[in-house]
Image 1 (cartoon, rainbow, N blue to C red):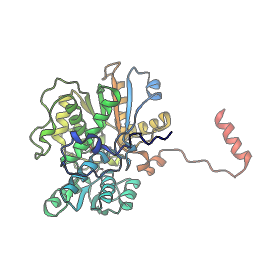
Image 2: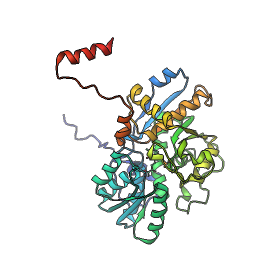
Image 3: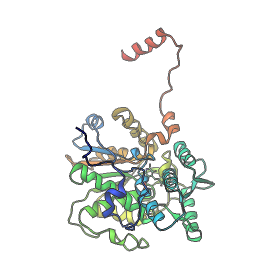
Image 4: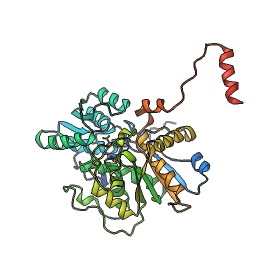
Length: 379
Ligand code: AN7
């Protein structure tokens, strides 16, 4: 017996899988690295330790090809850019967008220019942009300043802007909501996300809204102010909970923040580009924004790593830190289901991980010395 008659089932990425729900050119050939299809892991130990009656899942986006959710948007943005004949992409980034743009540009054989705030991106992300051969431009200014520059540059030079102001980015990122619905059989009651530039919370809201039968795709090409988010809904959608670091929390201040600061450098953003869309998603979903201290964020990161075996980067842990804070305050309905997006992998930022862990013990390479440590620590 041979299995020559078996149908091929190789997963080839989200453009191929969701093509009928993406507004890309019909002749576009997917520029893919197999992104998407990430695990939805049910937390076991943290809910038990907290003694809560809530089903908590994490969408582990750190398992994408460049280890963050950005790959979902990047595959669609670069696919469309190449189909339109573009030969270069540009972005400003706190790190993950630049890593993803660099990888997808390499895959497509085009140039990536990435602007990053000098000294303020995590080591792994810098390594990725450099390894993939992007032209890395460090600026003596923060992400928001870089964003202003690339928006102006994209108007003056033949380069495609691949920050999330490019509507194809949000179109790709909305597929995370589709996957969650497929995995659970229905949307969750709440969806928790870290919020920086606010593209991802907007993209998830588009995804959930499309699933609920509301046509939000139609206006994806407008300048961004046509109010493409639905004004009313009959289909069920989750409440969207957006979490920010206190030092970079424009949605909590109700105004832009000029000097954002947080250990979670991925969300060190004070002037979010999807400001209006994210407010609309929050209000229409019946959700809210909340803020966390850096200590709360790092504590949640450590808790996920130590108690669940899941290593995410600091910014990602804001979703779980926020959920825990709101659970303690009694803000969620008992018996609900919750999804927290873990946006990036912990290996992105080894410095912050090592800084908050205890030092390894160094001993002589002798049986006795090692055995003593084992026995001491099992007592
Ligand atoms: C791990 O890479 O903005 O609210 O330039 O890397 O959609 O901006 C990264 C953002 C959350 C916030 N978690 O998402 C960039 C960048 C991680 C991130 C966010 C980012 P948005």
